[in-house]
Length: 178
Image (cartoon, rainbow, N blue to C red; front, side, top):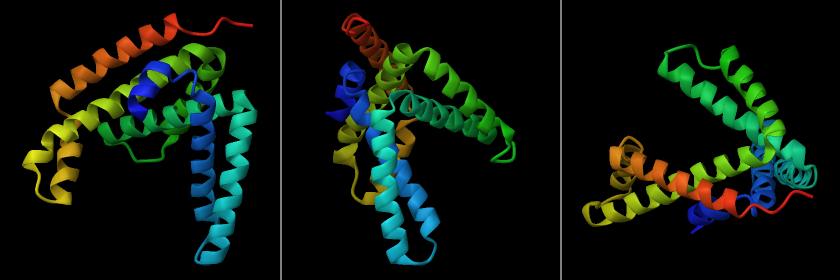
């Protein structure tokens, strides 16, 4: 259901999504800062999750830039893996910064394209997993099936078609600029 909502009306729910992303990043950062002390880790995680979630929600451009950076960093990391480059070279950082700037300038288009593709991917992977349920017997079987689904040509084509349909729907129903 969340995949379909993201694919077709992701722009309208973006502030909510960006707050969740900010909160998740805050929790991850808090987990890293807490070290071995469980109480300190919990305090940092909760505090930073709330703080970054609120910043991402209320400082909209910062949230969009944050999302752009994350997407660019992931793309740069994937390129490093595919080309057998050392992980954490300059490429993920540069691609993250470039996409953060692009996201700020092409705000609405970036959000529509990003939510349409992410929602389509979630929805297609969920449908693929459900079709595999009858043939799966254990949790590891299910995990392997989902990992294999990303490389499945039918799932990839369905994701692309659904993402394009989601983009068309969202662009047609965007609220007018103020």
